[in-house]
Amino acid sequence: MDKKKALVVGGYGTVGSIISEILAKDERIMPVIAGRNESRAKELAHKLQVEWRTIDICDAKSISSALPNIGVIINCFSGPFTHAPLLLPELSAKSGIHYMDVSGSYEYTERFLKLNELALKNNMTLITALGTNPGIPGIALMSAKDDFEMLESGRIVFVFGTRLDGISASSLKELKHMFDVKPLIWKKPRWIKPNASSRKEYVGKPFEREVYLGVSVTRDLLTIPELVDVDELSFWSGSQSTGQGLVMIAGLKLGLTRSDRGAQLFLNMLKQMGKTKQSIPGALIKVEVTGMKQGIRQKRTMEMYCDENYATALAPAIACQQIVEKKITRRGAFVPPEIVPATDFMDRLGKFAIHSSVATEEC
Ligand SMILES: NC(=O)c1ccc[n+]([C@@H]2O[C@H](COP(=O)([O-])OP(=O)(O)OC[C@H]3O[C@@H](n4cnc5c(N)ncnc54)[C@H](OP(=O)(O)O)[C@@H]3O)[C@@H](O)[C@H]2O)c1
Image (tube, rainbow, N blue to C red; front, side, top):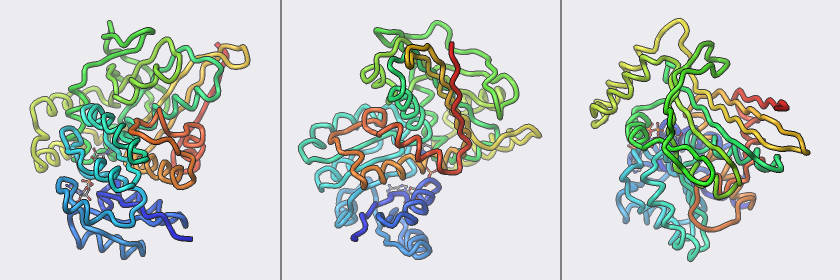
């Protein structure tokens, strides 16, 4: 059987190399390692015994020469995706190739979704924002929709551990743009500005103390009330250490991540600051939903404690497998809650090295 070739752009980077390693173990798929640096692409391709290509996502000629015989593109270039060109998804659709990326950018998603007509015209599937956050929380929420007869509320909590192991300089640069997005919560029938936009809360293990959380919103979540009839929906994020979180926000606002070197130095400083006896390496995603199941009102809490880069890599790797298995067949430009088969995705996610749990109680 011919393997489906998945071009992993940024394939030797932090997230991309994990995706490449996961896909190299799938006998139906061959990752093709791509980036601007030929020797780095070759080196990993040689190790995994797969193919490699060079590509610059800002250059149409370079993209076109990398696309022959590719079936799926997974874009995890270093970003920020905010204000990045849409050339790659556009040329992907025009060349008859499915596309997905790990963007965390609200601004990029707004532009990306306008590629819907182009994707439909070319009978292709384009998916953006498939990562740890955004990505997995929205899919987890949709998996509850598959199981409940009626959903009443959804609340997502995302907390970084102070070691910031899963944050690279690239991710930190994108975070600056994420913090610029105005917070919103869904109170049926509309998205509104929240009255109280922050609170201290005990979020459970492994964070054994109260964490300061702020409300924000990611672009994928805006689609959820269009897909599910839900009364309330909110997204809260924070850091294990309030001090570290505040320094991060201040540094991002001051523009310390403007250059690559500045972003790396600032990240090193934040990591140094986070080194304490209690410091925790990964990130916690907690999704709480309430709703009716078999006539009984229930609250379900799904928790995932993970390395952010690893979980980010799993999201497109799983969606790529779903495309190959024809579990994703709709065409157009989407965010994950609209297109990713959620229960199947969560089942597969649980098979990887992620600490996950689901608890249901009557309420
Ligand atoms: N949604 C989420 O939850 C989430 C979580 C973590 C990370 N991310 C995102 O994931 C992306 C990758 O992060 P990372 O930590 O893996 O970054 P990284 O380690 O810096 O790797 C980035 C890769 O992209 C390649 N690249 C950079 N510019 C390129 C271009 N113009 N054309 C083609 N390739 C290019 C780099 O190689 P060359 O420089 O040699 O070309 C490198 O291989 C970032 O955009 C980050 O924001 C998202």
